[in-house]
Length: 323
Image: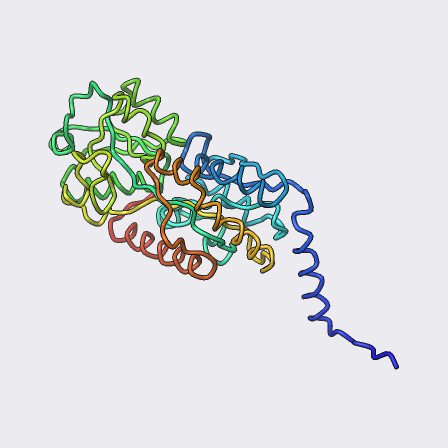
């Protein structure tokens, strides 16, 4: 006698979800949305992982730059995307942690509106000047900014670089250290080299080439300890602004409700990619390193929530707001 098996509606939905996830991505292209222009930290790390991820998933994985509003345009694009695993975010510390405390309103919740999959890498913010700048050290620049305007650029209002400058100014009394926001690091770097601004705060990943060829001078770093490749540059903590210590992290995130089997497959693909010698070598070249072990899944979600809450509170305490 045949026995019939009846499935409840929730069981049928769960079965259908697993079936779709098993077929995913079914050779359909996957977009990784980076909220900053080409050449920035999110773009560089996104492209580093995109190629091996394409091989692992058997489909094309393409980085798409959606720059603007301190990365929040790109993040919002993913927040509003269908949870089908075909649109993912190169999640970044700025739109997911720093900007929420500074911008008057953002159209998404950095935690509730996303499925956070894994952290990929971290990099400190650095403060640099032109090689021919009159400022040989950060103390010299700070002393000048106590007496007359000194202009520093960043990738946007509410960025980690904005925080670095604002917190340094507050801690040292450099009341005329003026913030000039840009739509990414690349245009800010152009203006620095052209003499339109005095200093640039940016992820070290995006400036390693210019630091090594001598066209830029490194004045300070936001890392907890001095960077071994540039041991003469003090940390912001050493300069009197320990509250400015931070890294800019990069991760992979999807929209809210991304099916668990898709999250699991992405996590399983990312772990060996992060250990590839070629990836590790490029991260060293970028002066960026993966956290070991890298937070993933629920741990990464808790990390994003804690990071966001800390910098929202810091913005309020220091009066760092959009202008």
